[in-house]
Image (cartoon, rainbow, N blue to C red; front, side, top):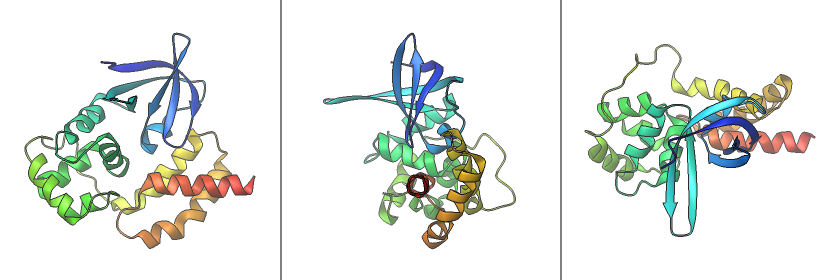
Length: 201
């Protein structure tokens, strides 16, 4: 079990990072939130979870141990694999997921791509006593839907784009985010934003 990786960031992509550990580049799958805190060439330490399959070894990286723990607990529910667990953490913080499960918030779970109404109901039942209570104070003020702009902007800066480029890309995908309704999926918006930046260059 690889509990964490620590070293300089050697590469960044929309859904992963490469951390240099002892002269070896370790590829780590990360959410946009985690990637937004990374900078090329800067030292980082990511909590990790190794997922072993017959045909692959995939390392998932997280900003802290709490996020990793929630990632692993989510997978104890039937039908939840690492990709869906990561998608849930891309849309919601660990505490937001705990609140959603504790309060039976079906709508919060269906905001995650790949989770329908029946899937959300099943997850609420299965995870009710597994995630525990929220550890932080409940979010106050702006609804979750307003947070996608800041998350997306931070992720683009983390990938090395200039502030102006990031602002233009966020503005370009705003209609898509508003059309989605509910809570926009930051990962999908990041891909769309990168496409607009690639076209502009």
